Image 1 (cartoon, rainbow, N blue to C red):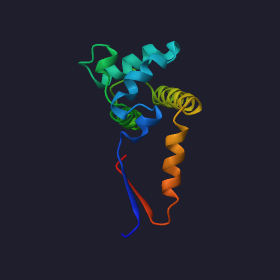
Image 2 (image 1 turned 180 degrees about the vertical axis):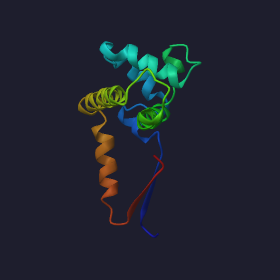
Image 3 (image 1 turned 90 degrees about the vertical axis):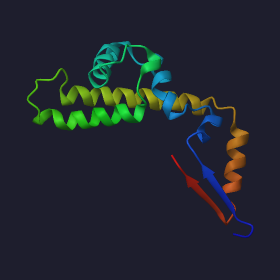
Image 4 (image 1 turned 45 degrees about the vertical axis):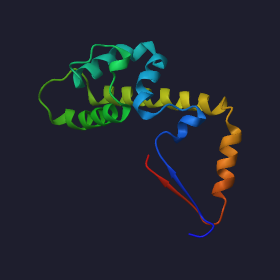
Amino acid sequence: MDGGRVFVIGAGFSRAFGYPTADRLLRLLWRRLAVRWKKDFERVVQFHHPLWTGERRGLPPIEILLTELYVNRDLLPVLTLGGKFSPSRLDELIDDLLLAMANWFHEIHSTNNRIDLRNAFVDFLKHPLAQVISFN
């Protein structure tokens, strides 16, 4: 590709803009969770990860936890185990988790001092032969 530009972007690309990588996201978000639902959240994590000791550093990656929450929410109506959580409560916890993450990302975006890097990258992307390959 003569004169073209190919950008291969991995999971760490957003780190330059102040966003956490996925493997650290839940651990860092933990501090920001509302106290009103933290106990329920702890019980849900403990249910899915019985060996979890309650320490922030032992939390699972967010993709794994969200997958578990969605799967269990969908399976609860057909299970007869009489679980500790209703599908509607899991929906509330998922919504609260995602809202806390969205609010945090908005804060990061609004206080981002790497506008120069973002603008330079956007300018590179304006090249007519620019292509982006993302592994996110």
